[in-house]
Image (tube, rainbow, N blue to C red; front, side):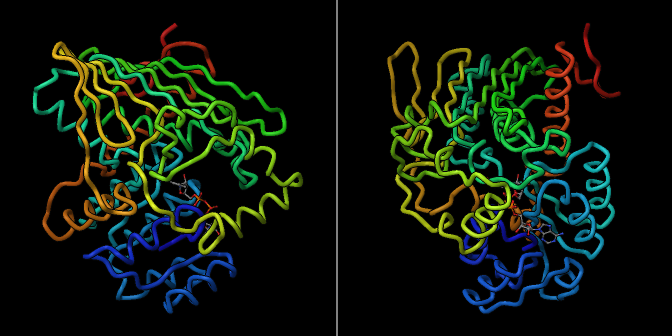
Length: 385
Ligand SMILES: NC(=O)c1ccc[n+]([C@@H]2O[C@H](COP(=O)([O-])OP(=O)(O)OC[C@H]3O[C@@H](n4cnc5c(N)ncnc54)[C@H](O)[C@@H]3O)[C@@H](O)[C@H]2O)c1
């Protein structure tokens, strides 16, 4: 593992408990998380990526460093002949994505980008239902997620619009990946608006994106992270990881340390490997990313905290999904890695798939900036006046 922060803390037990994986070591710049990892797991840690990659026992790496390091660390790992699972977003630019794809193709290594909520069991079930032909082709996706994202403790660059902060890079990749899996067509164009409502945290905290797919399906992707309305209220208070929640409007904002240095320390201590906010919990429902209603040619299908609800001319029926994993979507990432490396199964969330999500994110950012539709062409983005 490279990176033992928030994402690394979630993924470490998933890798360690996976039937086909063995966790052999980790790398992070922070001594605190390294010592917690060493003590809990009796495994070596390193403060340099190269030192970890030099281990013969490392066949694949999971990269959970901040987004600005994804390309650097993935390229290093691929050059060392390792398979790579890199966190979302794949990278910050299309040139970085292209370099990662080229390196994976040259070395023959597997490159997977995850986890996004596109690995959620409910999303797979939605795709399978559509692929079965029962409900017809998707026509309209209505997706929205209202959270406390902006008021969780953040690194300084996450609050800096010039350094990739804001919901387009951090949260929208989940919605874009989910929409792309469900529709299973390339995105043709986007039109978006964003807003930054809090001058003390001047990154975009909400986005409204209208996405059109080839073939004519459209999606409305709405995200708001201002800790007011919480859309999990409409998922029976089951949170995005499947945990039971209680209403706590404004609580994240009220609990936020006032001084940026204290905020960073809280992030590095409580929200990192072994931190008090990263403890395991009993799962009461399915992981999900806000609300999603998919209108298909013959039915409306809603993603719920327990499966799917299908509404059609015969009335309404539930499709319950059974899964006993503590982190089913995260396990699915490493199932995909295993299947690709050991069984030669082509991975869905590979470099090319994930590059298209970065491309759509860039187009959404550009559309919001210029106030016009942005069309995605093979030759690049084109702003439509
Ligand atoms: N899929 C998800 O649900 C999910 C959840 C959280 C974060 N993420 C993604 O994971 C990535 C990391 O986010 P995070 O919230 O865990 O960040 P974080 O700041 O909590 O953790 C990042 C860790 O990387 C370490 N690090 C930084 N530079 C390093 C370097 N050069 N070498 C080794 N270690 C280094 C830091 O010390 C830190 O511990 C981001 O891309 C984010 O979008 C995904």
